[in-house]
Length: 182
Image (cartoon, rainbow, N blue to C red; front, side, top):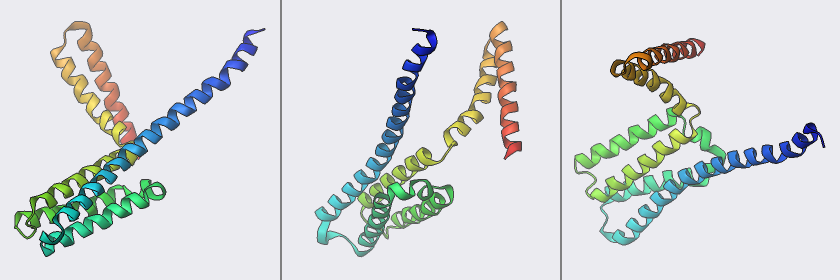
């Protein structure tokens, strides 16, 4: 048996294992984000059942609106997870969440639990935005790394200081090239 035969036999299981690892990671991300929306909807529905006839009209309207958003996010999650959580749509929903927050501050929405449920939905929306917006985390890392390298260069000495400065220059160049490309 030659080394080529060995690699021919070993390569397919390695490629298959890498594919399964990637698939498992994407399913984990999918489940984590969907779970937050389902948990929020569960809290919302249990609160509405517990309060039943004690809810004020404005509280009920706010909760029904949030229930419709949650239903939309959960039921169409697989088909629209990349377009549902784009920046424009998230900014629109954040404006609506701020309006609800203002209504809570002006005491139009009386129950503070309604505000907590809205904040929980906002957290789920943000985590979905971060999870399904391509390259947002890598872009944030690219912006933070030069600052971190410069900080290390300031506090470092000798050899480390020289290398940290070189890394900071390289990362700054990478960021400039990326910005000029887009």
